[in-house]
Image 1 (cartoon, rainbow, N blue to C red):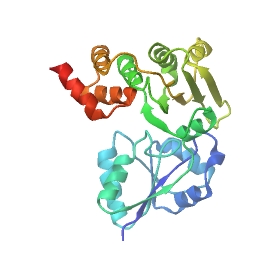
Image 2 (cartoon, rainbow, N blue to C red; image 1 turned 180 degrees about the vertical axis):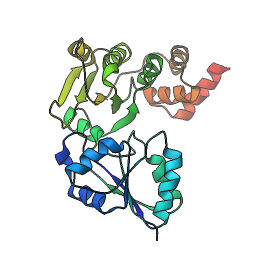
Image 3 (cartoon, one colour; image 1 turned 30 degrees about the vertical axis):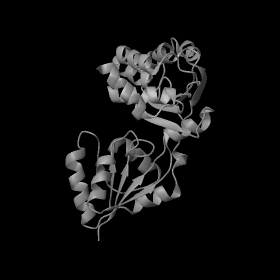
Length: 275
């Protein structure tokens, strides 16, 4: 019989957030695949876990996955952990899980900390529906394109962002989404210097101006205020085509949502416009 791949969540800062089950699983498995073995060794030492570590990250995923699957097929159970939080969420790992599923190897979740969920839970923003987009693009053009897509989003949108790019991202939000758009910035969650900023985008730019920001960040953008669309469907299609680099499929989807119309109806209008 094949072994089991355990996807184990680990603390995002405070080591006391480790679950009893996570400690037991990491003690019992034959091997732990870790994003950074030196970083993970500190966690294992804290809990006196002697299990061997092997590196598994975005640069060796392909070759390492085959090796790990071989061990699983031979009957060994393994654990997958990331540097912090839940593996496979904006972290390496999903390819290994996908391959295990394809060859019939059982994959089990050992749930626990997640920066995304922790930030949402204390943000004060609506959480009945939200979209997680992962990391914002590093380059300004890509970041602005992505923010344009979510300018009128009716759900809370969650991003990960690097500290040194926070101010640039906030300025882009002000320009694209408006200075009065509500947002939250969660930093260093569960750590000694944990901080949550909550306010408008313009206030955030002012708050972080000149500050040297450190630590992991979750940036949360509130749902856009509902508004009555201006002009006609054809005008909206033409405007988005002229002002963005979105494909026609994405433009049609966005306009249909804005006007509350079936996508097929807006698609017909887009064909007329293109003709």
